[in-house]
Length: 316
Image (cartoon, rainbow, N blue to C red; front, side, top):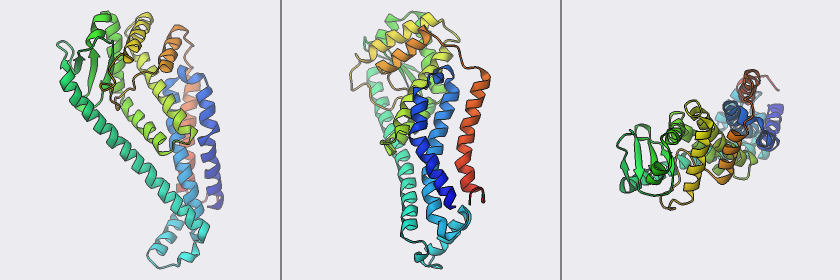
């Protein structure tokens, strides 16, 4: 397990710095948003698994030749059947660090969920006071404000799309249809779960480039994926106009209305600019072959640390 621990440590370092930096600078993800999304998820999962696995394997080196035998040895120490001196100071420290990091990641994930759930509940209560149900659109609320604003609020069967009166007055029926398709895609594809996971990852490890770059990239990719769904039913010019008009309204909405925790984050100027640039100067979509290669590589990337930890004898 000694070499396994060092290999996992090297993989963790690569996935923490050069790989996410390189991917964030690449221009192909906008041409293959689904494949890029899978790759970002694989980088985050494999990176976390490699960090914890490297420390765990190094800590168990004196207790066995593989993870299973090492954990059995650790159990003997915990139950008093074997002396703690068997480990040594460095190995005991590595095991403690692995346990603390695992607990930190799980706790941060739960805490992020709790905070987002609480914020959404407060937001929903606020909407009951500031909005009214749409007369002709199910699961849609209309807020009394002249700024052109649209967003979605997830909640399972209680998920709603929120529109402003200003948006309804400003947009044409085709443009409004584009906005609704975009927001409904966020809900049907459960983009809020991705935002939650990567927000928790960044909160847990804010010093890692992976966490910051991944959150920014995923936020941008879900907007691209929602735009692509809308483009199946509306023209490009209609969607461009709708994006520009909705983006002009987010800065005008009162801060107490824009409570955090929506399924989609209100677009930043950079995200809006990137979306409009992609639509106005489109690049050809990545071909099926390269996209399949990226997805296969992402799955392989996740499989490597998993196999090293679970399959005995891959690396001694």
